[in-house]
Image 1 (tube, protein in one colour):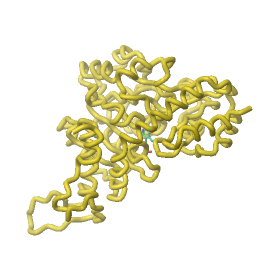
Image 2 (image 1 turned 90 degrees about the horizontal axis):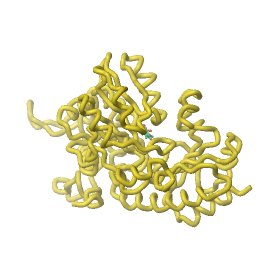
Image 3 (image 1 turned 30 degrees about the horizontal axis):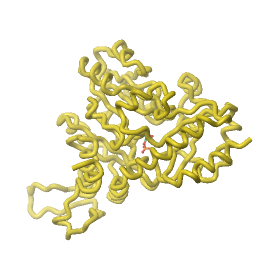
Image 4 (image 1 turned 90 degrees about the vertical axis):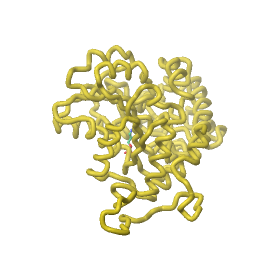
Length: 381
Ligand SMILES: *Cc1c(COP(=O)(O)O)cnc(C)c1O
């Protein structure tokens, strides 16, 4: 079956569910045994729930993985993978230009627990070679990155990591499996904040992991059950419902973002547009190879590089709410400096190029004419 068909059908079989077309919400914490010692598929909702299984199996299929695992948030998913793969004394190499929450988890939770983190600019894959030591166990990647939409070559980096027996994890939140499948490119682990495009309607917080390796699955599954950061059935249901329209939504997000990137890159009030679909983007050729299309997120730097100018623009926008997060059907604008990357030290933001006059736009699926008109009026002198 093709992608859109799997998004709608895999993970759930209506037989045994009163032929209910949608997966029922198993709003229960516990399942009853017939007799002592019975082998049961579901026992207690922390270890498993049929609504959650439907979502986990669907995600596995979309990522071309053997196993899926669901968590109560994207951060809980990242945390579970890190705990499953690392013990005190181990090292992780992480992409320098990382999501703020992942950066905070690595530096303020993992490092104090005895794990060494090396942040490396991996735009040239060969820079990985010198960062790996005999203690390195994991490579942590994100592509495209938040907020500046840089790409890394997942295939080349995975090949180098594997030569050193280092596992590779990719945060695929921005691309979604519709646009990019990291396991097929050579990675071992995919993580998602399903809060974003997979859920797609800004109404659920959820994290997902996909793997094919049995040992990795067992280890992450152990943390999932032992630490217990699992989603409830309602959140699994909402995420599954979102996934059914993922292909449709992503194509519209991409159509709209391509038009917006083109419009903004020709606007006098905009100094720079970061979008991998633009031929001028430094990773445009890599994006063409690695992704089906270029996604719905665009970052811009205003010509007036001040917080006041960023604020004026954000406040003038009518359709775009000034908010954290991304990937919902509605357009959003985010001031990365104070919002998504607020927890990152100023020095680090300066190194990465996250500036006061920078804004990240999550382009929704509204009519493109309305989106362009809103941006036009907000940028007017
Ligand atoms: C939002 C986000 C996360 C964190 O996910 P939550 O669901 O908010 O916990 C992780 N990675 C990326 C790239 C994100 O955008």
